[in-house]
Image: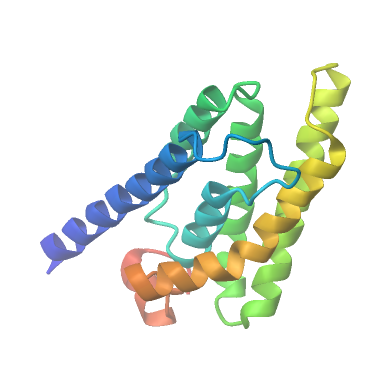
Length: 179
């Protein structure tokens, strides 16, 4: 029984990494040759928030840091800043996951939205203080808003396709989490 749980744990961790790699690959493809006026959602960030709140053992901090650092390097962002902010945000969400487990979807969505707003504004503030060139504020805010709006769809996709659901109180104790 424990061996099957361990196999599932590692296969879901591998699936999380594969999903993030697919999103990175998709964003790197030159599918649209004309610049867009609207920024799409940060699907990797939405995946991280979904998996951290629903099944925190599947998305470890080391995996999150490695994936987001890779995106920093590939998407030519200042390396490390966004990684640190996403890691802090995901750990803040993980610490609140036990309290959000019994509540409905709306408090969870509000919590995720507030974390996304804080890390986006912190990123803008630090880059502004260091005088680093940034994307226009409107484009950054649109991407943040799109990520918040796409969060329910990422949850539905993760739940329907991969079975990523909130931990039930009985499951939490067997996995070593707080009930």
